Image: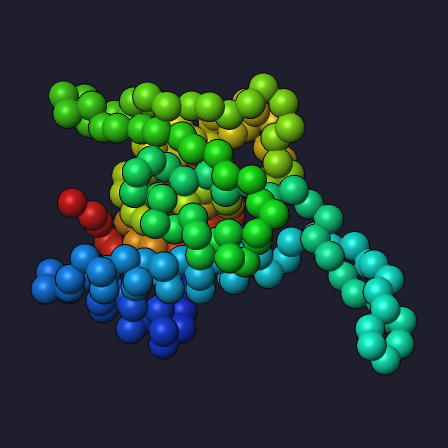
Length: 188
């Protein structure tokens, strides 16, 4: 598996058209972000570790499988908040940890303003959700923070990513998995 997954699906194309259209009403935009996030979430969870568990069905006893990893969802405030609920619908037992960043207008560099990650109990897998991966400065800051926290595996879910941002993450964090719905040559 490549560490960059450009998830392609007719529904992704349909919902991307909605979020890219300047005439889209806010309510339609939020619904499209929700649906795109759900599709990316399914793709980003396809290889999560599981363990067998014996269960009794109405007919017989059988072996089922349950997740064997603790997953944390890390939205980058505020834009990433719209992507949290669809991922939680898939992973209702996941933890949610917020990191707040803003762009310094003079330097164009990200600045952290909110970080309430606990000292311990880092999840095995963190899913960073941010609708746009532009030059990659914010994602860089978040990945480094999650690594310091002790997260073993980091996955980034972005609806739209720039080639520059993807290249930066691949160069600086070769083990981080990226899941994107669209790749643009550049973002402004």
